[in-house]
Image (cartoon, rainbow, N blue to C red; front, side, top):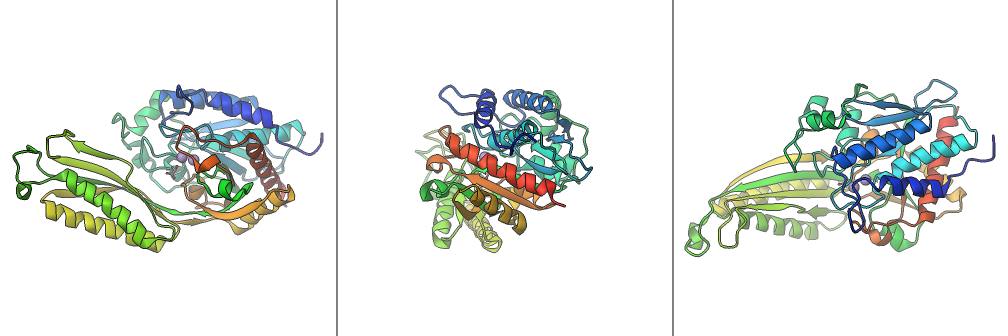
Amino acid sequence: MTGAPRINGPRLLQRLADLGRFGALPGGGTNRLALSDADRAARDWTVQQMRALDMHVAIDAIGNVLATCAGTADLAPVATGSHIDTVRTGGLYDGNYGVMAGLEVVAALRDAGVRTRRPLQVAFFTNEEGARFQPDMLGSLVHVGGMPLADALAAVAVDDGATLGAELARIGYAGTAPVGAPRVDSFVELHIEQGPVLDREGVDIGVVEGVQGICWMEFSFAGHSNHAGTTPMALRADAGMAALRCAAFVHELVARYGGRQLGTVGAVTFQPNLINVIAGRATMTIDLRNTDGTLLRAAQAEVLAHARRLAAEHGVQFSHRSLADFAPVQFDAALVDSVERHARAAGLSTLRMPSGAGHDAQMLARVCPTAMVFVPSAGGLSHNVREHTDARQLEQGANVLLQVMLERANRA
Ligand code: HGY
Ligand code: MN
Ligand code: MN
């Protein structure tokens, strides 16, 4: 053994910069939608990195990539990882950091001549973001048996109408490894916080105790487009107005619920979307989140009921579909304690907190002991090209991941 294993910070940063080339935006940031050409290139490069570390790489039927380095015993692996797809206005770190740090853990252990008892696995999961296909965390959801493979392959891209299955085949990632019942001992995901808490409090490590519930819906209103100047208000079937008043209701509901209730209307489309034409159709997305599953359900029911009332008032048809529906998740207490213990042993400040963002870890928690490690996001920015985390913080987080995985992989 050549000394205690330590993360090689410059090597981790170099991998993150190299990965950032795929889908790089001119002014900085990343646009790497799931199963796009940029995603294919990033996948190919990451698989190359995995193979260069002598890891066995398996690609499953939903395109998840699972790289494993053997342990001294043939036991279920201790896994880590995240995603390398991004939103259109992504940064360098969301998801990418967890995958590159996982590879750095493997490289650091190899440098130190350390072979763990249990195998170590580094994964990246398909379509975590949900920006192109829904639901989000689709690949890890299929991985753990939470969504039938056929349903996932039939998912339709919001940008160009391609099916997920066709896109997987097109980029060469329609793998053969089975999905639904993974052999995994535990899962620890390292991720940037993507929120303001750690940065504002000046805390080094977020000890994540769970993930809040997520409810994504698409609402559609269908009325009649007509002339904006000649159609009396009482004779209108204005789909656009119904949608906008529904968005205003979401804003009012969140203020009324307070606490940890969140509500976002991220996308609204009108047809024909012209200044002097009453909108005949309006489609909108609604993202509701809460750490309390009961309150989240109540918020969802209120928003749906109000949308129906608005549709009746405006004389328009209303329809909706669920795009994602995940209950809040609690992580494994012992593994969460391990994250806190190793962070403090390294002299780092810690804060226990829930995750505001969805993560693949919330899916792995269905099948094995799971925890997450957060590092600060400068200014709380994420899903934004200016997303940033200091090099020192990135290295600190990776060292905590290394120690947690090492302890877990070598336990009796
Ligand atoms: O939406 C989310 O929380 C995640 O980034 N997919
Ligand atoms: Mn992420
Ligand atoms: Mn994200």
